[in-house]
Each structure stands twice: as C-alpha cells, then as structure tokens.
Amino acid sequence: MSIMKPESQFITLSPENLDREHICCAFAGSKAAAGVAGKKEWIRGQLDKGFVFRKLDAKAKVFIEYTPAEQAWAPLDAPGYLAISCFWVSGKYKGHGFGKELLASCEAEAENGVVVVSSAKKRPFMADKKFFEQYGYEVCDTAPPYFELLVKRMKKDSPLPRFRAAPKHPACPNTGGITVYYTAQCPYNEYYVNVAEAEVAKRHGLPFVVHPITTQAEARDAPTAFPLHSVFYKGKLVTHEFLYDDRTFDRVMKPVLARE
Image 1 (cartoon, helix red, strand yellow):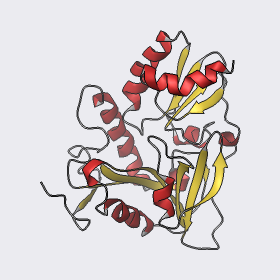
Image 2: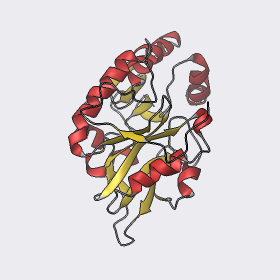
Image 3: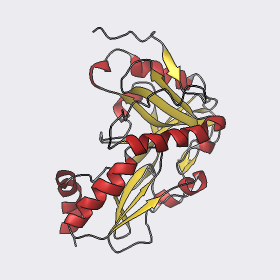
Image 4: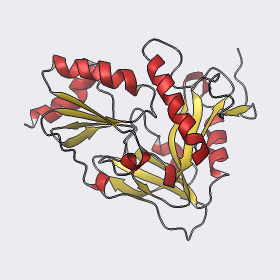
C-alpha cells in the first residue's frame, strides 16, 4: 500500500469526533485501553483551552499535540508561545514530509513562537532536537538532569521562554525509594506506571510510590521539566523513561544504585 503524500488530509480532534477517532500513539489493546480512555477524557477537558491534537487521516502514529504555553501541563513561563507536548512520526511514515507539515501547521498558529522540551541526546518518548534544529529551533533554557527547552521565535523581540523554578532544582519529598510523577496526558501511564513499573520495583525490593498530577496548576509547579512521566529515586530525579521491564531498569538504575 502506498503512503499518502503530505498534502493528504489531517484530522484535528474536536468534541464531535473525539470518541470515534484513535489517538495514534496507543491503539486498542488490553494494556492501553484504560489509558486511552483516560487520555480522551483529559483531551475533552482541554479542547476549550486551546489544546490541539492533529493527526494523519490513517491508522498511523503520525500526530502533533500543542497548546498555549499558559495552559500547558508543564512548568513553563512562555506567554504568547505555543508549547508542543507530543510529536510523533513513526515507522514507514518517516521521510515523507508529514512531520514538516504538522510542525508548520502549529507554527502558523503561533503568536510569539513555539517551544518544545527536548535534550541534547536523542531519548525515548521525547522530541528529537536535531529535527527541530533543521527548522530554526534553538536552546533557550535547561533543567537537570538533561532537559533542554527549544524555541523558535516568530517575533524576535519576544521574551525568551524559561522553565519555572521547581524543575531547576528537581526534588520530591519521598526519599525512601522510587516515586513516579505522571499525568493522564500519556495513555501509556495508566498501565506502565501502576502495573509494569510497580512490579519491576517490587522485584528489585524497592519501595514504590505513584504521584498522579491531576491539575494544570500542579503540573506547572511540578519538580520536573517533564511531568508527563518522571522517575525519582530517594527524592532525586533520575529519568523520564518508563522503567517497565528489568532490562530498562538495569540500564537506568544500576548506575544510580552503584553510587550508593
């Protein structure tokens, strides 16, 4: 089957089509079902606040999510900017201009510019810095342990966006084991946090606490630049990745545990 060209139709989610449209990154399945339902309810509550979910009209992981930065579930100070929260073009759909088209559609709606959280090194579930640099994005702020805030200013005299204070010194009050902060914005969280990560922590004999972020105000004050999903160990931010199996746990946590 041939892949459609960039001029093919994109669908923007609305209250009228939300229930019948898939949300791209998580197709139907027992593990993702509860998370998909939660994500759709989260989207329903954001649509009247300027949130946009635009996707290719195909059963594919080709989509972009963005919102006015003042309404973003992220610790950002970026008035007048749009904030990209998720952006994905996967598999056979790469290299056909879909990403460029989706990004351009976001930029066309921006007043001061567009921001997106990334990192110097390509990491899972995070925007690819090299892709954005092709289109004029540059680093305007950083937050530990590896987060970078990228910006493209449409108005060159617009104030540069910044991370808020809390993610500059990421720490959580639980100092006894693993704590995971997460929001309903990612449909994988419901299963991978509450089942997979909990089971992995138990197998490794580590206390495990979940901290669901349930309001935008809480997300803006989160102690991590990536409240979508962040893992703390003994109060210190370790990673934004899912520790959903022993292999990933060993790669991420063994160096941390070895320093104790």
